[in-house]
Length: 80
Image 1: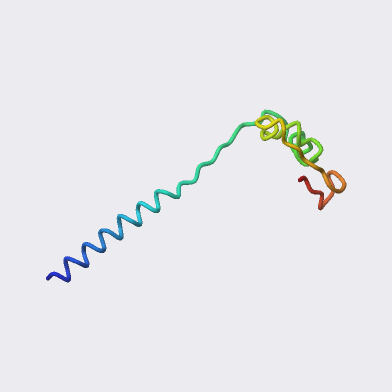
Image 2 (image 1 turned 90 degrees about the horizontal axis):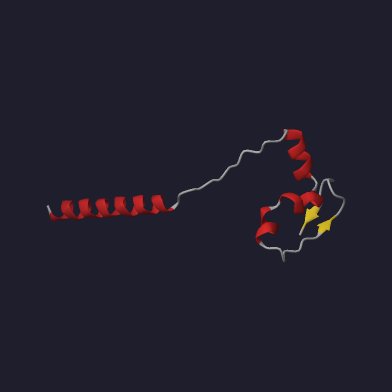
């Protein structure tokens, strides 16, 4: 009988721990509505030379520096 009670206690503790860990992994997302044509938005964000026009990080940190490598808009270009 003692073993049955111990098993039940361990199962309850395991369930509580499992639920606590599961609650700690909550995903949060944000979204905005852009009132502009899709083509215009794509043109703006696909050319990395326009990064300074739309990046929220540059507004938060005006000391941020970035370097565009390779041809802008081409496959393989990089923004560092």
